[in-house]
Length: 278
Image (cartoon, rainbow, N blue to C red; front, side, top):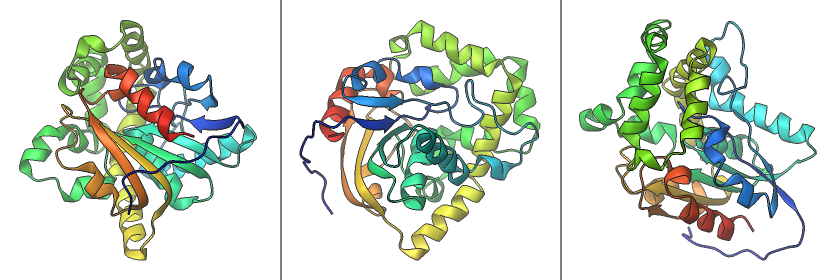
């Protein structure tokens, strides 16, 4: 296993997919990063199924929001744009879709960058009482419909602001226009429902898929870059040690920021991505 690698640069323009980040974010989370990456790559930044301006099933089941299903969404979308293989950069929920895509469709992903996560199964297995307190939203949002939806829909802007205050080392670093986009999206009850179904899948079918991959000895074949916020409460262990259990080639480092790495530390995030996506 290697924690670093170099790859030759080419003059060919390639695609980089950056699926939308996580509850309560949308593709607006990439506003600092995407324009810079677009100078070298064709950048595709979709909202995940049901998030932001995307729409999921009108009467969803939890399985409709598994990482496997959303990874298939992304493969189909990239194929429709003419890209059979691409680099993939994901933050939190988008990164979970990303590593599942790399496991299920290994020939599709040239490089995988995962921002501020470790695999879902590892997160669940390491969730002792202290970590569960920090990560309470996993357990809250996974409760049966319509309990969390009803509570959140009472004041969705409050919940968005609560999550930003809880996870950001510097909440003021987030652009007010981006936060306004998150408020707008989360005011839609369909987005709240989709977000909760995503987390329900995270503590059910996604665990089954990860467990089956681990038992089968499946490995992520492409190079993996792991970045995380040193002040993020969502990663309380060495992510590189965890990712090396799942991938053949891993590199990465912590950044001086909270959970929203590409918004709180855009220059350092871009520097790391620029060196990796070659």
